[in-house]
Length: 188
Image 1 (cartoon, rainbow, N blue to C red):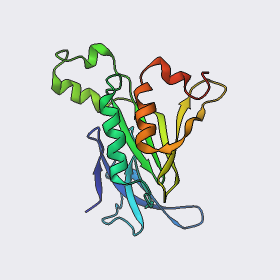
Image 2: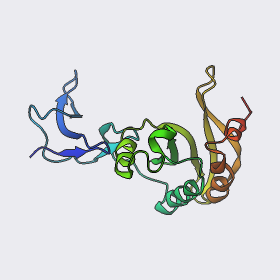
Image 3: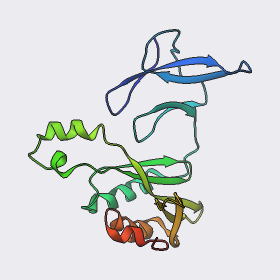
């Protein structure tokens, strides 16, 4: 039976194997269940779904971020009333915060129903906004960055000084969704 993964939008993806030009195996997901699908995940690989629901097979990554550190960032996000739609993604030594804007009319309570809000939430488009990079795994020191959409830059810029994750999260996450966010790291 072909490996199937249903993404956060409820769309089913099936795992297949193809060949590169040099004859090496390559793995991919398709929404079509045509052809010869794989019934096991190859050793050393894992299924990864990005914040916008695309599904990939990638080599397993050594996670240097602990579950407690992720919970710490999620807890700080829950306190920020300006950010309602977010996803925290982990990549090796980085916690990345993705946010999505939704129309107040579409997401306001009562209009439409809560079930409709949950349904609409599945289809939001998420953008990377902030990340915390681990720079010293023994002392658990991080530095914070925000994504700059300034046109000529469109890249990550460092904000503040390195520090403990809880301190950085308490300092910078409240700025998400506010004008003060765009003043962090240079005020572009």
